[in-house]
Image (cartoon, rainbow, N blue to C red; front, side, top):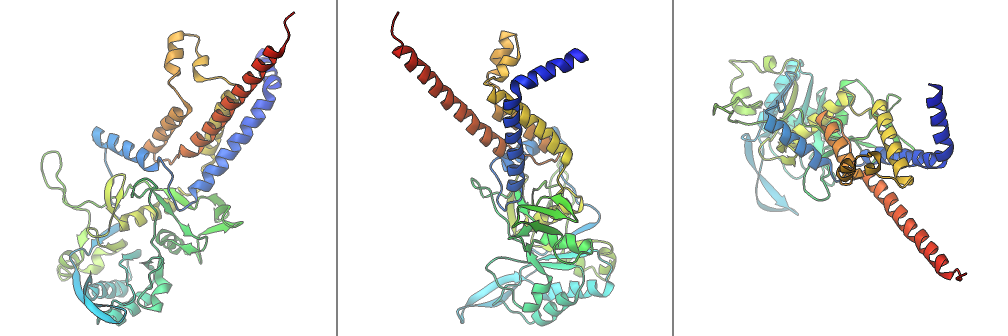
Length: 414
């Protein structure tokens, strides 16, 4: 044991400068990765890694997504009405919108029963679109507890009273593809998303549950360090009528507002169907977005983000941070010492195999393992930083060798 410690101390004395620089690089990667995770925009690689894992799971026949008993998805894609529409005060035709009379009937029943957990009505009430049911509907929404509706940047709501129950429902897409991969909870450090509003209401918190510090340099939730964004894992998925492996039709995991809920009220009362449920009301056919599991309604994106918060997966996992910090430090030490993976093995054949093993490959393997266990790991930050270090070391070595060659040529012959 004493000899081992002597070797470690000897190695440290010979490499303390390299190790110190590697520790600083690891700290920079850790901090930068945290800042990237807080942004609105997803980084390259998130969507691809998720899709690959999802395809493998599908190939292996593993269970793909479910809807908890606590959530009731209500589809309004076939509950539509026509309403006159104007542009700059001039009538231009009719607009197809969700039937607001039916929404009013549902909310009236829900308000009277008051036995639901929460209502997320993913229906936009845009200024300039009016119906006869608006006044009663908007007053009902404003008077209800535990309800949220969406708002979008640059779009005004039809009535000011709706802002007391609204939250931001915008999201960003990947920079290469128009696909959803990343969700930000607090926009511009002050505007709560739908998921964050639901999370704060369910925990009976006043204001935003996530608090920014130093202009968004870091974020906390109830004093604990957390992330303001998350790579979402679509564990709750909305499916229509599908066929299983034997060709049998599977039951959809949502109900229709008119056909299933309102029309059958006398048979199965609404108050019984919504008891202890989180109601998610939206157009699951028209309002869809591309995700790593395929098209999904915007409502499911918000619900998965909400569940991420409720399950505490936005808090910083210090064990994961520590493990990755050790990995970063080890890789950095190798880089700065000018060694490579193939030098780790005396066997020449293993050396040949490891010559194809790059840092990017290592981080890809880590990303795949992490995503398999529903842990987000973006390889873009460490891969980019180590690529820059590698480029710098190569350029420095070329410069040093060039200087040595010039010095050798200038030495006069004896």
